[in-house]
Image (tube, rainbow, N blue to C red; front, side):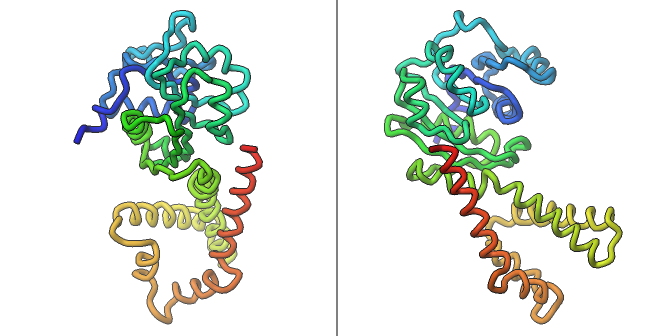
Length: 277
C-alpha cells in the first residue's frame, strides 16, 4: 500500500490561506510534501504565512497569467467570494484538475456551474481542530472523481486529521451540524460546567480552571482509548449510587442532555440546508 506522501499530487494551487488553509499547508510540509509543488493565492497573507513560503520555497501570489491548471485546485476562501473570484480562477482548471472545496454551503453543483473546466469535484467539511492536526473532515465526491483523486484527497485532508467519506453529498449538512459546528458545543459545555461550579460555591477562576482541564483531559482520554466507546468510558467513571450517578440521573432524564443535543444538531442541520439552498 502506498504511503500518504505517495498520494500527494504533483501540483497544488491553494486559493485562500487563512486559518484552515495555513493549517493544511503546515500539515503538508510536516508530512513531506515537496513545498515547491504548491502555489498559494492569498490577497492578504499573514506575516507567518509569508515567512513559511519564503523558507520552504512555496510560490505565494505569482501572476495569474503565469499559472497553468494544477492537478488539485483547493478552494479555502470565504464562501461569499466564490462568485467574484470564479472567473479569474477558471483558467486554472483543466480537464484533469480535481477541485477540492472547503467552502461551507457551496454545493458540488454550485462549483461545477462556476468552474466548468472539470467535473471532478470534492466537497469537504472540516472543523477547527484541524488547526492543531486533530480535525475531522466529512467528504463527498462527484461521480467523476477517480480513485487516484480520492487518494490525493485523503492525503491532503489527512494532514490535518481524520477523513470520513460520505455516501452522498446530502449528508454534508448533518456532518456540518455534528462535527463542523461541534467544537462550539464542547466549548459551551466547559463554559456551562464552570458556571455550575461557581453556583456551587467555587471561586469563578477556580471553577473555570477545573471545568477547562476536565474537558481537555476527558477528550484526550477518549482519544487515547479508541477501543472504548464514549458510553463505556462514562460507565467506567460512574459508581452505582455515587455522585456521578446522581448528576447523570439529571442529564439523562427525559428532557435532559440527549434530546437537547438532538434538537441542537437538528437546528444546525436545518440552517446548513438553508445556507446551501
